[in-house]
Length: 132
Image (cartoon, rainbow, N blue to C red; front, side, top):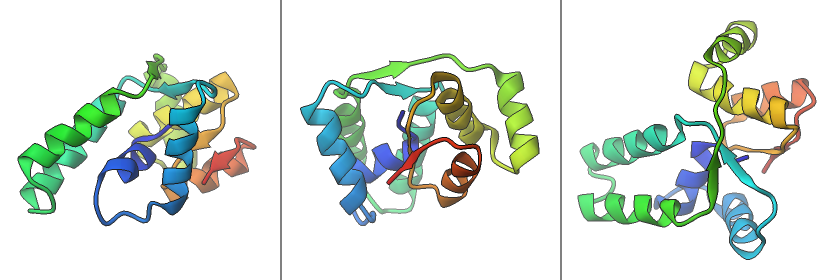
């Protein structure tokens, strides 16, 4: 299961990408594990790319190319229950969109790929394996 922070590290310049790129290579070379994402993933990714354009970090053409690259990965969109996400957010002081990843990892007993240290800490406290 991949969160937006890891996927964006695959395509944005200047990210601390060593460990994220290892996961990307694993995903590209091996059809397993299944790359689960919540429905909000694509909006979160597109929003970060839009912000990167506004901050002159990347050009519009680079953002479009980055999105195309990510769309070529075999992500599986899996619905999550917003009520459960809200409860996780309240209980663990996480943004609801981060709780969507956590809820999905818990429900599917999946390893969570995230660069978000706060999310990783909560996941590990709930005995969800998190990488990198």
